[in-house]
Picture (cartoon, rainbow, N blue to C red):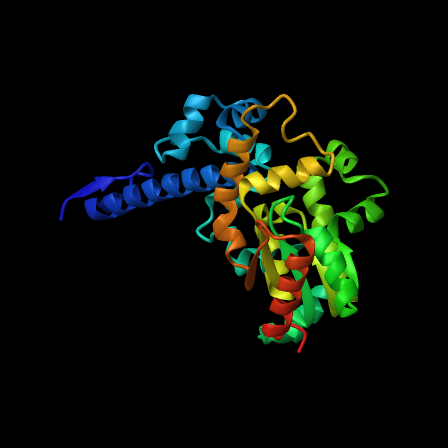
Length: 305
């Protein structure tokens, strides 16, 4: 068997070197795929990521194609621009699906007392028990989550909570100011804290969450674990029309490509939204019709049994 010498002067087999090269190629490909997915989930063009990270659009294109052998320093800048941890881009575990990463991060940030309790009590828990009678409505803005959540709460006698309102109450400022003051990473941290408080204080409720919650793997996994999730769907044109009907012209203001971007965001998030336990399409339905559909879905699925 042929041998080669590594940088330490040690003899290693050629097969070992080949396997090492294959592992490096797999890592580069994985990093590129995750950067591409993270950027798509946030709905930002490569040009915007380039400006935020200081990495050229051409180099980002190579990276996302699995052809760019990026340095750790540059990758850290890309991760920060995406509001991601660099280990999410490098690790073998998928940050959007890995329970191990979520538990590890929570355990690492917990107090010593909490860690001790976790070590004593950690055991498989039936999903139905973990979710209790909590229902969460997910989906893009304009699908009808807040309207339907509030009306369904009244219809079924359940408390209704908007996660963003919890964030605002805790931060003492509107969400737009939270974003401006703390940035995306700070907002996500407050979002995670608000969700944890709600789980700790509510066994029965309806929760409406922001559409971008799926872009944070840890928070979204927690939501799926502790809530019966329902994806409130609508066509992109109906999403846009409803937002504009509410008097919010931001999606269209000075942006003729807004509809294309909305479609792109929806497409990139579909596989994540599709992890919901149930789906409700509100396209072409009145509020009262959608309310009846949602109440029936909850009863038929036995989500409150």
